[in-house]
Amino acid sequence: QLQLVESGGGLVQPGGSLRLSCAASGFTLDYYTIGWFRQAPGKEREGVSCISKSGSSTNYADSVKGRFTISRDNAKNTVYLQMNSLEPEDTAVYYCAADPYIFPHLCNMRRDYRYWGQGTQATVSS
Image 1 (cartoon, helix red, strand yellow):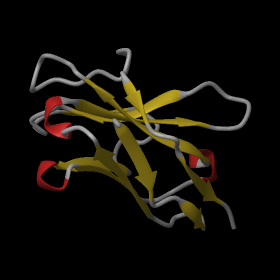
Image 2 (cartoon, rainbow, N blue to C red):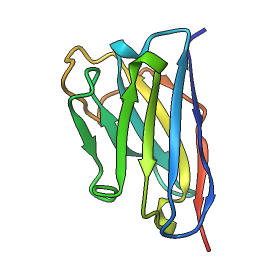
Image 3 (cartoon, rainbow, N blue to C red):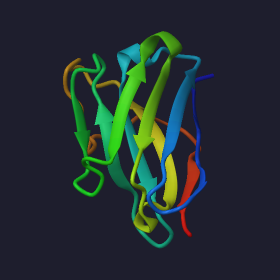
Image 4 (cartoon, helix red, strand yellow):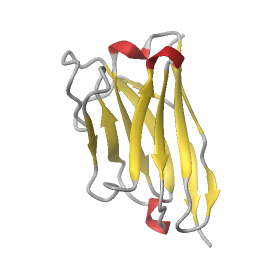
């Protein structure tokens, strides 16, 4: 069974950090571009970041540039999202998703990602 499982969410104060993980089972992440998306209450889902299959290319939403860092460890079949300087506006359910994009050195958050995890809640509040 192909599955993505997110972890690492929680409650953190403004200015704090969280590290989200996205682990795959049943398939190898090497062959997929991975994206992180989030959805806040009452808002549409938005792309946060993505990383190419090779790991050589990353993209970020303007709202998180300079604060979030995406990385992948193909040996562990896991992708990470390091979130620093968190703000209340970052509160959302965070999802990872996999896209079998043919280009190994590109990623695009606007593509139709094939596999999705169940999400992990990140709450930024004092």
